[in-house]
Length: 143
Image 1 (cartoon, rainbow, N blue to C red):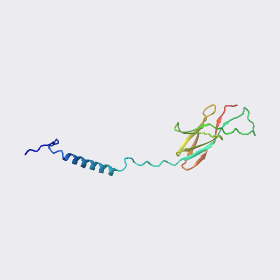
Image 2: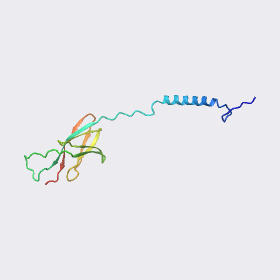
Image 3: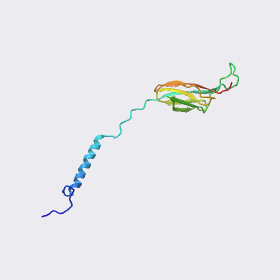
C-alpha cells in the first residue's frame, strides 16, 4: 500500500519537522541561557576630585596704590580645564565669584575667560577624593 502525504526533501514525513524545530529551538535556548549576559560589566569609574577657587579680574582701577582694596571676585566667568589642548570640563563662577569643578583624577591646565587676552594656563593635579583650591586672576587690560 502506497503512503500518501507530504514529505520533506529527504523523503521523511512532515510530521517530524515540527519536532525537529522544537528540539533545535530548545537547544538554542539552552546555549543562549548558558552564555549569561551579553554585556561585560563596566569597570568602576575612577573617583573624582574637586577643584574650587575664585576668579578676579585685575587691575580694577587705572592706577592702583598700595593699601587699596583688592578687586572683588567676578561672577559669570567661565573656567576651563584642559588636557592635551582639549577642554575636558568647564565651570562658571557663581554670584560670589567662586567656581567648583568635579574632575577625574589627572593633571589639567586651567584658565579663565574674561580678560583682554587668554591668560596663561595654570597646571593643577586632581587626586581622587581630594579637593584643591586654585584662585585665578584675569587681566582686565586697565593700565
